[in-house]
Length: 110
Image 1 (cartoon, helix red, strand yellow):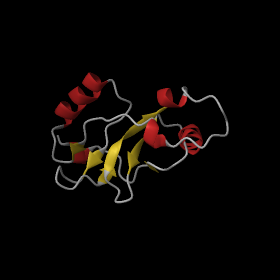
Image 2 (cartoon, helix red, strand yellow):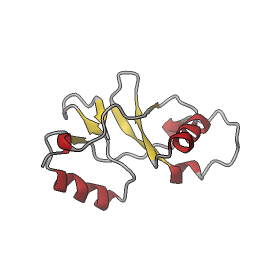
Image 3 (tube, one colour):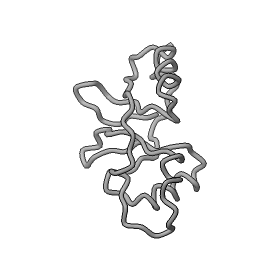
Image 4 (cartoon, helix red, strand yellow):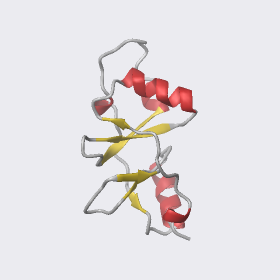
């Protein structure tokens, strides 16, 4: 079984310039554990998680997610599901972004 058989398409995501407080609100409102972070070309830069959100206590802040993103391995839809699961466990990550390809790291899902 491949990642493309099970990944969530059209995921919520934030851009690197998104305020951390907005990302925290998106996570809370949508009951997710983290969000992929992308640049203006929708290339995956990393993720931001609920654990990262706990480091900011203010309800109003001009801090962006760029300073809190965590780099994680990206997976493609053609990767074996079990290999992706091993990466998820190894990284102790809330999610792994699924990209189009290594050459074109555009977000496709999680």
